[in-house]
Length: 428
Image 1 (cartoon, rainbow, N blue to C red):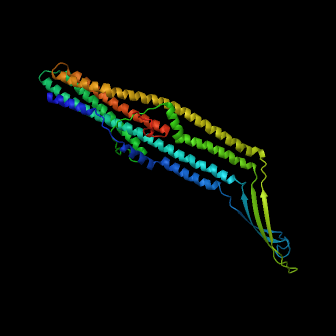
Image 2: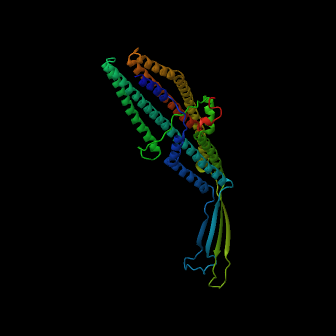
Image 3: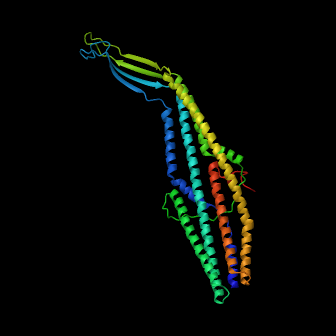
């Protein structure tokens, strides 16, 4: 029995260790999700359409070709009866007021810039969703691993109890107790496996592959704790969050639209060229000269019904709307930052408490209970309780570390930045 108890102690020491690991599997899943995402493909098509609209709105309209007959007599419909009769070919071209096309191009280009920010924000959201589900999957698998090893320890304890029962050193109630614990841990394993399948299905859905496909995952890494406060996060989000950048660009576009609308107060121009072909007059046999005509048209910007003024007012209203939306978004982010900072700080303290105090204490308690049980100083139920407590603490530690990484993923999405790469954001 001493050999078995020593084996229990060694198993407990290796079970609750946290090997460092890289995030190669996570990076691979994120890249795969980005490559197949229908949302990103849709936004990239939207970007291409926005780029095309720049050419649509910033070039001259097509010229107009005119073909006609002038002063054709209705009594004969003859081209040689009257000197004023002619066959006309004309070409006209409209010209906006100087600077209007450039203003239209500037406004249209902002649409493409806005879509680039939508693409960047969508990419960040995909990274966030994959990361959160990934860390949840890592936790579930570590919990299953811990539960399986705990079940092995319980089965070994059950063998010892049965051996003691055979020599009347343990009661049947002890056997029933350990069997119940084995059944409970088996039920917990099945529950965790069901959760693993659910989380894997969520990840596979984002990868556009069969929901039953196995999703690879690394070990829980050693956590690099963040040094955060709301002011630093707010500043970081204003500089890097694509959604906020998109709102700023939309506000800039509204200013450009106001400038473009202002050109409607000025006239547009139309240049027309006409050439009239005249035939020889039949009565006099006189060859007539052709006519060439040049005309310039100027539109009269009378602003009927205040339609131009309304365009300017609409652009000003849009500017105010985007400014308000930006301030509202910043306000919402500030609240989220306060909640996230509080949660991350709490998780950090709890992780340190478990790692530095509760887990070592639970290991010591478990080892002491094994030694005491060996010399019959305590009942085996104390060993069971110590083992269960050790399992619970170790599982809770996995949970807290996963929650920290999940919350960090959410915070990186809100700020648009990988926080570990920002100077001053990691604790020394």
